[in-house]
Amino acid sequence: MRAQDRTILHVDMDAFFASVEQRDHPELRGKPVLVGGTGDRGVVAAASYEARAYGCRSAMPMTLARRLCPQAIIVKGSYSRYQAVSEQICDIFRQFTDQIQPLSIDEAFLDVTGSLVLFGSGEKIAQEIRSRIRSQIRLTASIGVATNKFLAKLASDLSKPDGLMVIHPEMVEKVLPSLAVDRIWGIGTKTAQRLYRLGIKTVHDLRKMDDNWLAAHFGSYSHRIRELIYGIDHQPVHAPDPPKSIGQQQTFPEDLLTQQDIRNVLLEQAQSVGGRLRQSRLPGSVRDR
Image (cartoon, rainbow, N blue to C red):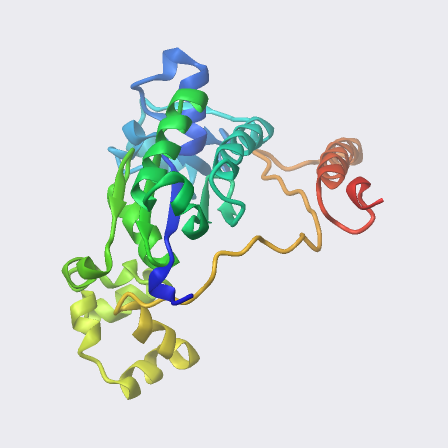
């Protein structure tokens, strides 16, 4: 099958952790909510769109987020609860395809090429998935539809929140050239800032650079960059490999000063890892026996 004949969806839940909290606690709806650690060392795991309006975002130190939005309501959150909701969402995906590639707890790629005969176009499938997530899970999702993963994710990003966008092949030249360079996979914040200083701000600007220039700035990744800036992406949707290890980490608001405190935390973490091990596909886990 030619790459341009594929139909790929990228499903991204809107402010997932914060949205689950607002769903489960009606008093939080319409208010700025931050999910994460509450101490001086805490980090924002998710920010509701009401909080994002003040500049709050995930991975931001909680102290900074609280300065930006003093009225924000901080919730510690529950990863196990979010994981259970994520599984419910994946159950909806499986009603349309078994070709699913989770990227994280709140987003995934779906290859629905083989499902078009049964369910209609990619857009119709995306509409139905959004409808079922809204009615059954009571959350919203943004979905991008395209012929490859890069364009599908770009479409979902451009449609957030609670949106649906289809990038047809004939639309690529209308959508890509004016986009900022940091929309391209592999160009992070630091690289984008370096490009900005060189006067390269948009995909159109980057397209003007020849292969030697790209190789000098991106090395072995330059060929991939050249393809992406023209909307080309041949990567398949594939299920993730079984995890090779399972770990547990935690940021503490204050230092642990006694051996007993450390033992208590280690015991809690060992129990958590053991529970996740039983649900995993690691060799030696219950499922593999």
